[in-house]
Length: 479
Image 1 (cartoon, rainbow, N blue to C red):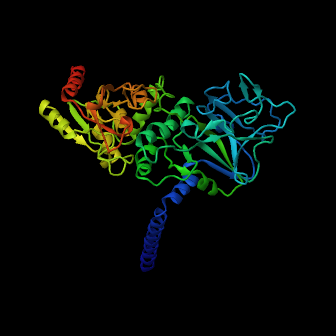
Image 2 (spheres, rainbow, N blue to C red):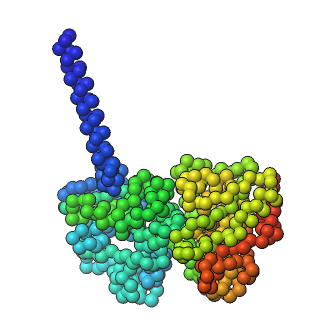
Image 3 (cartoon, rainbow, N blue to C red):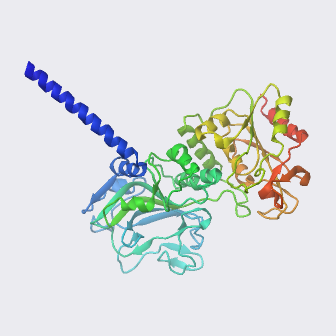
């Protein structure tokens, strides 16, 4: 009996020691989140083959497409394939092209993506150009060394290299999960561009190509910026796309101990520009993409995308902070007479709760919660207005225009310009009212010497006109 008690005590001590060591090890790993992310990716979330023998599973490679063996004599011979959406008749129209590549590999020795083609006497065409005819290479007769762009606006050209050999049979790592290779353009400093262009484009691309994979790995071509906004994306936005963290491409490739890192499915391109005029006059046909992305973000953060408030609530945006503000300026594209506006709204609509909000001072999930309970949003233009898509169904947004002092973006001198109109006009579940600007009496410059009212002026709101717009919103939301 005594011997039995001794054995039990010994086992208990071993358990306690194991738990202590485990906890200590976990604390050490937790101090390096990026390395932990890679460890998690490799050992749990991503399906990986690391082998010297090629044994591909047909139902994984083309699980949702036709796959019938007919021409291949050797069952271990595999080639690359791709499909695209966009202009498939003009090879130089690469900036807006979106493609999915199958069975491609990154060669770590050459730093190139390989597209494997069977060595054959009669190569098959890859592209059908209206002027150049059938093309057999991604690079021949090209003005640009590009087939797609990894960032919006065509800022980051990308093209694979064709090799006349079959898929590697040794010294390779095979990644089964969907991977996306991209580069953010404005996300580090602008929430609107980050949400609706850089990261939004990943959601749009999967929907456009009919691909769903919660194990998606987003590979950022460059180093990931260590900014407050990127930390917001990592916590509140990227998890709406995938269970995996965003990784830096170079570090991710180095984490594998093989010459080749191969991708069953790689999605590239499709980085949409949704704001700039005159290139983007409107976003016709993209309404469902914007709405579905908005809903994914809301749902991930624990709220119902279809929530509709039962009582009115007005939020007035106080744009008290902007990274684009010039040093020494009073403000940047804000509401110049904000206190007067707040006082007027509270006095004119005493039975409606009214709140002035500084969005940058609130965690993103709390921003979503506030905006979902809002029926009327009064906001300056610019990035701060791009919280608007999170409004509930049937809500109204009163968005400040700007006065055109410098003809640009498809607008003429003296017109009233809606800065994000090309995007906001296609947020179809929200009713937009643009507070138009008719002349110098409607705005004041943010600093001495400024002369461009689009970039450096704040709006002086006229209460009579504001009341007209609020009354219109209340009337349209009447049961």
